[in-house]
Length: 318
Image 1: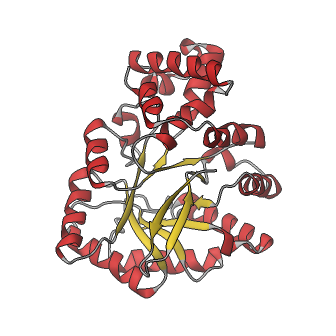
Image 2: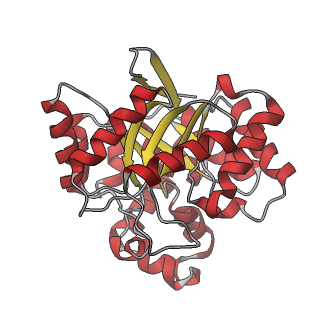
C-alpha cells in the first residue's frame, strides 16, 4: 500500500492509505458478516483509512463502522474519517451548515463510532449563504477540542475553498486539511451529480489544488466500474445514466489507453483506472467500495502498479 502524510494540530504525522474503504451504496445489501469480511480484507492488504458520514443512510453507515471497530478492537490502527453538516435523508430540505448541527453531528458520530476522536472530519455540505469565515471558525474549534485531528471540506466549489484557505492563512492557520470531491479517470459531466449536491473534479479545480498542494479525498473514484463494464459489454449495453455521465468520446479514448496499459503491466482494467487517481500529481486518496473481495482486490492492486505521475497523466490527457 502507498500513503499520503499529513500533520495533525500537534505536528504529529498521520498516514492515510491512498485507497480508502468507503461505505458505498453497493454495500448496503450485504450482510454484516460480508461487510466485516471486506473491511478485514482491506486492512490485510495494507489499507488503513475508512470513510463514512453521518448522512449516509441516516446514520446507519456510521453504526456499521462502529460495530466493526468494536468487534475487531482495531481503532488505534486505523484512520477514521466522517462528515457532518449535510441534510439528512429523512429531511433533505433542512439546511444544516451551522455550528449547532455540525457539532451535534460530530458528537453523534463519535458516539456511534465508539471513539473519542476522528482522524479527519469533513464539513459535508456547503451553504454559500453562510460566510466562509464562520465555517472555518467552526473547523478550528473542532480541532482545538481534540475531537478531530484534521478537518476538511466536502463538495465545496473552488471559490469557496480558496476563500476558506485565504481566511485561515490570514490568521496564520493551515486548518484546511483537504477537500473531498468526485474524481475519476472517467471524467464526468457535472449535471448527473449536481442533483445530489456533489461536485466533480474539473481542470480548473485541479489546477488550484495542484497549486496549493491541497490533499483530495476522491469519491466516485471508480466511476461505477465504467471502464471494466464497457470493456466487457460495450457502451451501448450500459444504462442510460452511465452513458450520459461517462460515455464521452474522450473517455472512450481513455478506455483504449487503460486497456493498453493493463495489457503491458499484466493488470486488471479497474486497477489501472484507479492507479491514475493515486499516482497523479495531486496527493489523492481514492475512496472505493466493493460488493466482494474480488472486486475490492482489483482496486487494491492499483497500489502495486507503481506508475509515474507521467504515466498516470498519459491515461487522462487524450
